Image 1: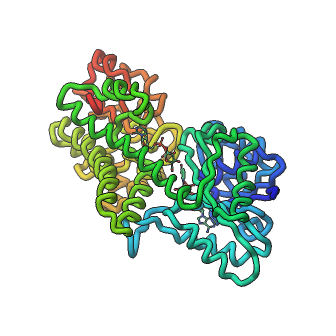
Image 2: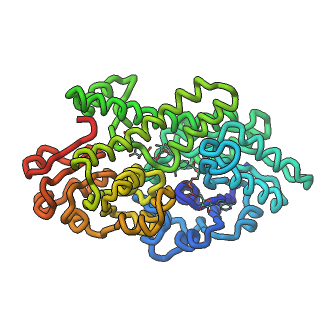
Image 3: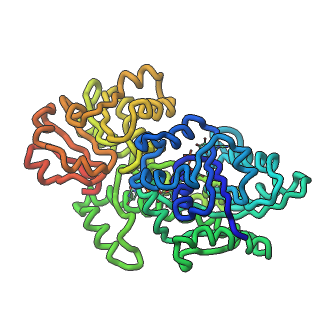
Length: 463
Ligand code: NAD
Ligand code: UGA
């Protein structure tokens, strides 16, 4: 079966870039990305590519090439579903905030809504592709909804989880380590798998396209994120031990990373991992394990989250303690608010939690981030619900110029590893700060020797 028309429900961080690349690489397939969020779709259609709703290096060029050729962004969800032979579901699957599984399980209401909408609208057979990250066995629920419409339309469900990382999304999509496609191991299922393999094989080498059964594919996605997050928590756990023993976490990471069985990547100690997925996916894994009565398995993975929370808390406590245990009324400058560099995404960013703890002590936080808006920062902090919104407004300010943010501050905390922070005139920053001037490098990116020569008192995670 040759696919000529694809619909993707969800124009977010995954749906947008993924479909842009699929469209760019398959000029003969019409790809329509739909979303309920009108503002988001308008932004995807904006003439000025700087206004795309997502900042990803290289994305503007891909969109510019494919948009209105064979890539379309629309709010007509029904129309796009009906016209497509293949429908990707790429909607959000956040942690549940209510009811059974609150704070742990994935909230699948958006997924179910999509399945019901497809069931209601479709009049021709379709391949449904789970692009969102889902608990293992979700395909069964989607199938059960789709197979009970009684209108004779036939569906095949595939799992095709996305492994892109934000900030490198385009690069990851252009040259993925692997594409994973799971499907039913029946004749029809294998045909559907092949149809999706053909979409990817226009640019991904065959040996990088893995096909499995549905459940292996669904579970591999949660597992991959759990392993990645576990590496960060492992090195972060060691960072504290380094601090008290005189070892240097970078040297330790380098030494262990040379072991080809361990490998050098994902061993950077930090103020804690953030992002929309690591925490949510591990909590989901913990919940699934518990629901099968596998309590030891659940406890093992939960520890990754406990360690991460501890690391954020420990960083904030270090600031408070170093500033003589009193930061009330003091200005503390934050360099960075995004959860990692090269993205405007702030979901679960460590900066939010560190700010919250410092504001509890009545410090004033002046944030500079090259890509995050003031409104986003406010809403991130308000979302925690720790205090009244007016109070957050009083204690948190976003400053558009880094030198201005650091002016008259008692301390600077680096929360995101943006490259530009390394190139600042640190002498000028020092001259304009209150003394002693402290730097807390939560990302280990600055030239610490140089900072100390200038006169800064420097704290680096893991040293
Ligand atoms: P997102 O919140 O950026 O985008 C989801 C979009 O879906 C939103 O724009 C929302 O309006 C839309 N939506 C929700 N319900 C809808 C409906 N019924 N009809 C039409 N539109 C609807 O989320 P995201 O970051 O793109 O993540 C999507 C999924 O991909 C999640 O399951 C996530 O775990 C997974 N994932 C994310 C990343 C990442 O880097 N962000 C990477 C890999 C996998
Ligand atoms: C992560 C995975 O890397 C992707 O493969 C996956 O598709 C995605 O989650 C997802 O499912 O959403 P992402 O969260 O975008 O991607 O970014 P990462 O590069 O993994 O970074 C996550 C967090 O860990 C960031 O806060 C980063 O600063 C932190 N990190 C990462 C460290 O502190 N140290 C490291 O060595 C690596």
